[in-house]
Length: 261
Ligand code: ZN
Image (cartoon, rainbow, N blue to C red; front, side):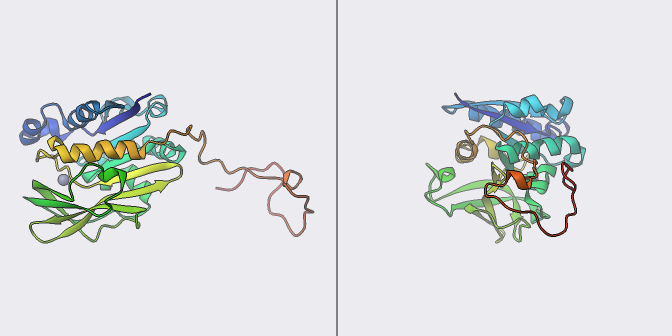
C-alpha cells in the first residue's frame, strides 16, 4: 500500500502575487504533490486553507500517513479546532513535514512548544545546504552539499527545541547559517522541518529539494496503527494494580472521578 500524503497549502500568494503565480502555475502545493506522485510508493493529494475545515476533516487525517504543510501569509486564519485535530493526529502517529515559513504555522508552534523565531532577509541570495547526518534516510541519494541560487535567508538563532537529529545546515551568501533540516518525535508522530521554499523562488522545482521531501515522507511514515486517543490519561484503581497493594495516605480524588486537566 502506498504512503498516503496530504500536501496542505494556504494557497494565498499564488493568487495575489504575479511572481508566485508565474513560478508556480500549478500552485505550490500542487507542485509539491506532483513531485511526490512521481515517486514509487507515494500517493499525494492536496488540501487548502479555503476548503471546508481547511481540507483537514477527521476522516481525511485518518487517511493521511504524512501531512506536508506550507503556509506563510495566513497562519492566523487557520482555525484552532483544526490545529487541535492536526496535533492529535501527529501525537497518534501521523507523520508531519513543515516547510519553510511553516516555522510559524500554528500546529508547528504547538508541537514545538517554543517561539520558533529566526532572523530573515529577502534578497534572493545563494543558499548552500550541507548534509550533517550522512547516513540519515532523509539525506539518501544527496550530494554532500547542494545549492539553491535564489533563496530567502533564515538565520540563527532558530527558536526551536534541540532536535533528535540535524540533517542539514544552510549557509547563506550574506554569511548567516541555519539548521535547515531537523527531526522531532512528538507522541507517536515523526516530524521533519525543512527550511527552503520561499514562494517567489523556484525551490520546489529543484530535484534535490524534491528528493529531500520524498525521503522525509518515507522517514516520517509510521506504519503502526494510529493511537485512537493520544490524550487519554486513565486512572488505574488499587484493585487493578499488577501487584497487590494496600491504599494508604490521604486522597484527593474520589473513585471513578475524571482526572483534572
Ligand atoms: Zn519565505
